[in-house]
Image 1: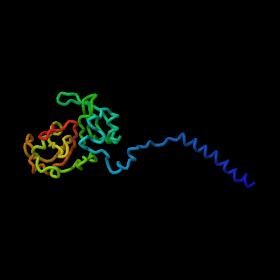
Image 2: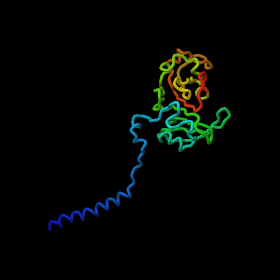
Image 3: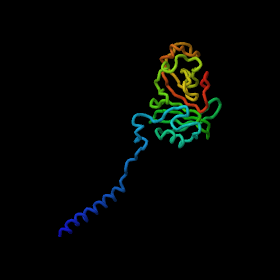
Image 4: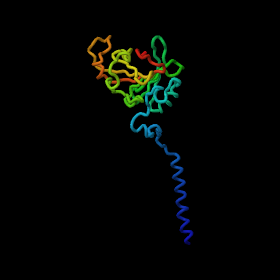
Length: 209
């Protein structure tokens, strides 16, 4: 009798366990973003601008959606487009966080990445420079390291990073002088980094081409 009493509850429980497993197999589980579970992403972006590139993007990275998404750890959604620059056709991808553009990655169609423009405040250079860093914390004067910006950055100033021939910082601020002239060093000292640019080709010291 003792043996039967102990076995019977076990036999009753087994069908319930099997039924539960069968039901669970039809449940719809929420999708998990493994990138969001990375501890490095809990405190900000894991992407860094260096002499070699941006995150995993380098001069050898193909300008394709899959390659760029992998190089940025899947931290952004991408949308593509085409543009003209100096009479040449360029392909680009915009790295998006929601509706906000955080980066622009560009190059020749079917080629490799040639340039990355970073405006994400969470991304900084390996030397600690990020959006909002002041001009005076990096430079004492603009001569031989800075030029007037071009295109969308025509009102800004672009300066070569002290540690890299591939990285430049775009500074924005207030200047009451003629638009055609470089702002004075005294005016620039309060300007802030508004964009970080990485280029596959080295930047000339006297001009950010």
